[in-house]
Image 1 (cartoon, one colour):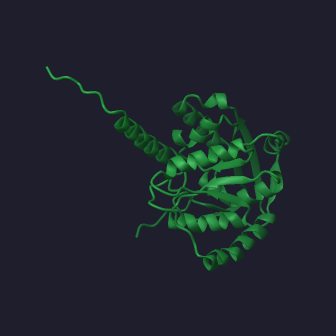
Image 2 (cartoon, one colour):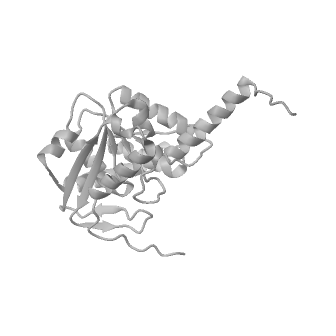
Image 3 (cartoon, one colour):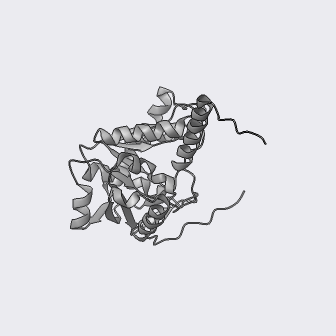
Length: 254
């Protein structure tokens, strides 16, 4: 009869760390990267005019928000994890500017080349990017976001980004909230008039001077104990407060 030989502690720890890295990367929906791509200074400078246009564009928007939602988003004294769909990112700068001044905001950005452009763009809008630096991208990013929350800063997560599927909140997207024990704020943005891009998520571009309706629904840490159940319930609630008045354009296959 064959005897089972116990694995050496070193191998057990290595296997456990590898599993944690893979699970965390999948949880945050970030593709594996071998290193962090960064832009040269003059390329980053090229992003400034675009960021300025977006800021001026956003300032023309008329945001309608109810008293309760206003109290929720302007809550002081504690950090918040904002959860919003990827195709609503355009107005995130303006929301921060109008309602969360004095609260630094950190967002998860992949270590890819596309992420380098996004990081430069976000920085011009006042949003700080958290990026990985090695094969431990997912774990490092999650740890960095938790540390920012514990320092009193806000964090924003797009649970269906960066590649979709659109409007699908994965259980792992809540991993940072569970680790930090922080309140989650579901963000609903209803565009009265917008253009939609033929991207994977039908990205919304609100028309200048149009009106948007902002909803902010808080969720306490206790509601996140069961990851699968929490993802199902929060995903459904997020869909309710983010109606699409205009369907996404059909993407043409090459």
